Length: 388
Image (cartoon, rainbow, N blue to C red; front, side, top):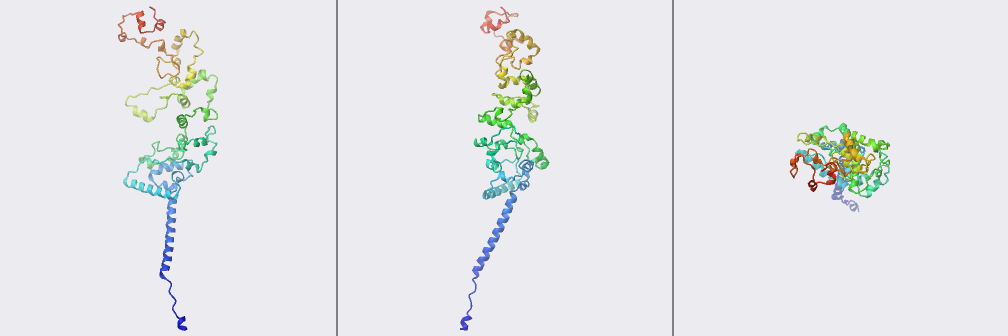
């Protein structure tokens, strides 16, 4: 009996313990791997990580000075799905390392795809957005959304001030970028906010009204336009003193394109200074004839043009020819949109400095008008001055 009790017990299987040990270590290292990977992914997803890249300094410092400085870069620029995020980062990191190692890193940086509406709508509800910063503007964001207008079509400069389009991100300038430069770049609101040209161009392309009342509650009529003598007297004087200001609104009211009234860029002036190209400087009188918006008033016969005006118009013209040229021109030209009456309608341009040698028929030294002249010329006009 005692010998039976002393029978040795079987030893625990060594393989079983080995499997447990391996499984424990595997779980530990997997947890460690994902913890480190998650921490690295989080750090590389932060906006501060973007600033560590030399080429990203302009984008980083303009973002810091923007209204979106509290929003992480990856909230707008990268898909938040874990798999896609890791894939994007791996590919981008390899691409950047190649560029840095070969010295071929290019600037400016361009996004392969535009920021989708979904990124903006994660913070902004366009269907409830009823207020705009100026208070005067009427911007129905829901209508734009329903018509397929992307947010970036209007708000492309909100985070970076269009520094790439402004030629501010060349590699030779990257070392100059800091918080001060970023703030300065974002201080010019015409690159931050959508301007009226953006709205007008889109409305024209989509055949939507461009009336002031469509976008402005007040109608945007300046105080000077409400004066009693503005239309009959002072509007021409104001145009003479600041035609650029008039053109800001009225160029979009013309049915034909207006050219030559915008400021010539410094680059254009520099490039043309040595090649003899001089652009004719247009004035308010040219503007009155070329802008079809002016036609409604300028094509109407003025009160001063009475039945006896034809007899007196010469004396008036000799006093101030420029005033006449607000509606008329010396010769008839296709560019005149306000009136069809020109000086040459009654006063042939050939009479000024007339060269008899150019006449197809030989003329005597003191040639008088004959019936033969009316073979080519119009008798009822010529006889107003010339008698046989």
